[in-house]
Every structure is written in structure tokens, then in C-alpha cells.
Amino acid sequence: MTDHRIALIPGDGIGAEVLPPAVAVLDRVGARHGVTFRYDEFDWSCTRYLAEGAMMPADGLDRIRHHDAILLGAVGWPGVPDHVSLWGLLIPIRRQFRQYVNLRPIRVFEGVPTPVLGAVPGMDFVVVRENVEGEYSEVGGRFNRGFPDEMAVQEAIFTRPGVTRILDYAFDLAATRRGHVTSATKSNGIVHTMPFWDELVVEAGARHPNVEWRQEHIDALVAKVVLDPSRFDVIVGSNLFGDILSDLAAAVAGSIGIAPAGNIDPSGEFPSMFEPVHGSAPDIAGQGVANPLGAIWSASMMLDHLGHPEAGAEVLAAVTAVLANSPVRTRDLGGTASTDEFTTAVLDTLPPPRT
Image 1: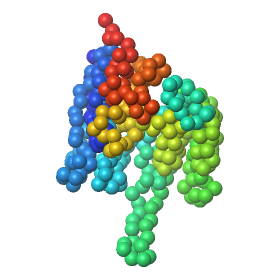
Image 2: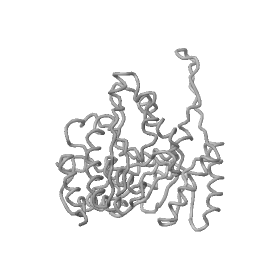
Image 3: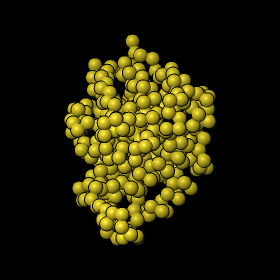
Image 4: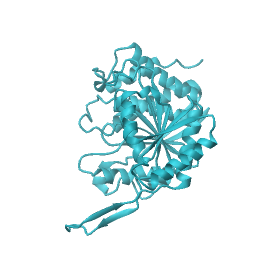
């Protein structure tokens, strides 16, 4: 038996509703593959912030530093500004644990309608987003607050090690897939950081001669993702560009509600964190209608990361079969199934335990 210790952070809104389905799936598939999970749950959330003035305790990172992985539900709630909730929980975890890869797989499932004609069932690509520097740096500030000449300065930080490692990750990933990388840039308008990024893409391409690559300006790239998504294999982008592209691509695939994400430290020195990207959805929280697919798919990614790719593939295959072969759909996908009903369908579709 292999044992893993997992930190659970349900967070806010439907986060607390979609993590139990993910845990149920993990336990079911784990039993089949000789893998056990021990869970430690943490109440870090906007509710905690409103009660105690902080999203997590001062020693929060130390409490989860030695877990094998982190499974997050959602963060954000009305009354707490988004920059407070994100910079108080999600971003410190990403940065202190060196989770410099944000991995967003995009797939069109049979049975999930998409608004894009070119997004046919079976289409899949991956967005690799730089996750700890770039445009989302902490460098900058406000000046002359409250006066007519008030100003704000935000610095984008691109380092050679930071850009190089995310590019190498993207090229290495492409080598295991269809062998093509598309780099998102805007070097015709952003005069310093983007030409630097482009130069390092050329260097990465030279290190990976078996992978084809091209670069696309971000404004043209988003149009091509909508008009012809099947042309892409691996798209790599800076923190900002990758953030925008991954949500756009999830919508192209049919629903941002089904999209997973991995915040990954490839070195394994720190725990990586997996999360659905649908947010806390206050408008449907507590109604039992949230789609657990994003959380279940995130659990599948976590299994892959922990060294159990066969188990991860079985989870994704079960989700695929439910969508392709049954009418079970949650409300966001045009159906009437509850969170529990969709979860039960996935559990019933998973292979039986080995004897």
C-alpha cells in the first residue's frame, strides 16, 4: 500500500460542495490501486477572514508544507475584495511552495456542448502558465493617494531562470504529446519583457530540436483559439497571458465549470496544489447543484502527479463515459442532476475493486 497525506482546503462557496466528490473518487480508485489517502482539512477562507482578519493563520504554510499534495475547492466571497482573498491564501501557497507551473488541460468531451464550431469532441490541448512572477509581481505601489494626481505603478518581473524553467517544462510536455509549442507574446507592443521572453523561447527551441514551435501575439492568438482550437498542442504564456488564455480555452471547450488546474512544483520539494477553476459561485452555493467535474478532474491530475497515472486515467475515463453515455448533467451543462447525482454516476462508472 502507498499512503499519501493530503491537505484539503474547501475554501468558500461551492468549494465545500465539490471537494467531497473528489475525495470520494480518490478513495474509490485508491482502493483499487493500493493507494490510501489521509486528509487534513483546513478552514482557510473568506469566512475565516471576516471572523479573524486573515485568510489563514500566520503559520499556515508550515502546517501544510509536509503534505504530499493540496486539494483546494474555491476562494472568494462577496464582502471580501478579490485581491485580499487571493493574496491572503492562494498566491502565498503558489509562491512559497515554488509552484511555478500552472497546468491547465483543455478537452472537449463528447456530450458537452460547446459554442465553438471547431471545438469537436476529442480535441485537447494544454495551457502552461508561468505561475509565480511576470505581470503578477508584488513590485510597485501607490503614490499621492486621494489626490488628483494619484498614481499606481505595477512592475512586471521576468527573470531568466523563471522564464527558462517554464519554457523547458512546456517543451518537455509537448515532447510527450504531439510535439508542438505555441508561445504567447506581445513583443510588438511591450518593449522589454516580451522580446526577452521571445529570446528565451528561441533558446528553449534549440534545446528541444524534436519539438516544433511558433510564437503568436496574444491578440491574434486568442482569436485563433476561438476560430481553430484544434491546431494547438501546448500553449505557453506568462502569468497574465496564461491566465487569460486558460479561462478562454475552458469556455471554448464548453464550460469553465469543468476545468481543472494544477499548481505544480516539478522538483517535488514542496507540495503541489490542485483546484477546479470555476470559483466559489456564490449564486448557487448551498443548493447542491454545483458541478463537481472540475474538482474530480483536478483529483485525477493529482493522482498523475503523485505517481499513479493509471488511477488518474481511470478517473478521467469514468468522467468521459458518464458524459458520453448517459444523460447525467449538472445544471451548468444543461441538465438537472445534482452534485451528488453526478458524483454517484462517476463512482458507478469507475472499474470495480481488484480481487
